[in-house]
Amino acid sequence: MQETNSVGIVAAQTAHFAQPLTLKSGAVLPQFDLVYETYGSLNADKSNAVLICHALSGTHHVAGKYSADDKYPGWWDNLIGPNKPLDTNKFFVIGVNNLGGCHGSTGSASTNPATGQPWGAQFPVVTVEDWVASQAMLADYLGIKQLAAVVGGSLGGMQAMQWTLAYPERVCHALVIASAPNLTAQNMAFNEVARQAIITDPEFHGGDYYAHGVVPRRGLRIARMLGHITYLSDDAMGAKFGRKLKDGIHYSFDAEFEMESYLRYQGDKFAGEFDANTYLRMTRALDYYDPALSFNNDLSLAFKQVKAAFLVVSFTSDWRFSPARSREIVKALLDNERTVSYAEVTAAHGHDAFLMPDAHYHEILRTYLNKVQV
Image (cartoon, rainbow, N blue to C red; front, side, top):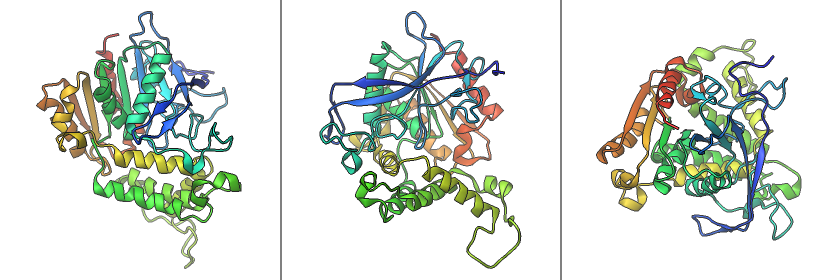
């Protein structure tokens, strides 16, 4: 029986772009595909579209299920659907897998038309700016001239920000959740350690492991385990695992603590479904994003061109993208007398709080989105 507030059974679609796309690096993609899903109905004047931008390991599968017995709905299914905070009775919601992704959009595992072989290491490094440019092309493909809102958490929040900078006339509202205007040195350090775990895996083969029929599984496992630690708060980890042993002390290097077992499980699961080259490119895009860089490191000056209204949300226990980083965004907008609402939500889940069905957090989003006119 289908849930009354679910978008129901969904299917991915593919948009093919035959025209070349010049990336920020100067590299050119001769053609590319973007895989996307939509929920709800586009209204007559196409004014109710909301774009969801995914974070590092996210996909286009944001809501709904692929079959009635699918155990895993889209990654933001608790937020999107009929009568949910992002109400598909009102909005036409679009989820997209970014360029360089490993869930159908053109990336390292895709065929390079020049060689007939997987792009592998030759697939260019992509940036937040490149993703937003390609997303704008998808909006054109769908006949949407202006988005009612762009919504994203973490790396997705950076994309929402970039939309307001690159296409100020094309977005009415930006919802930037658990994000930052750029990465701190510590965050960049986490990313580099994760990349080195992958790059130094003997099965990486310089990024051309497809040709060898192998996967740099060990590197991916470690990268995910490291990342997962940073997504949780100390309190959340303590409450969930503490120092609990699985079945006593054996004085070995097996997974004797429940926390160790959990991290290994997460690492194994991730290594079995995610592409290493994608992980490298997603983390690099995080590192490079810095809209203030071209404005003498003045974020207020960078935001001078913004026209969208903003909702910025942070979480008290998020130490990877702390509330202080969100307040930098708020200050830059206020310096330009832009419309911005800010909420700092008390939550124990750390950075992952933006994915959780927290009632207070969801009510904030619902209240804001109810006021968005379409």
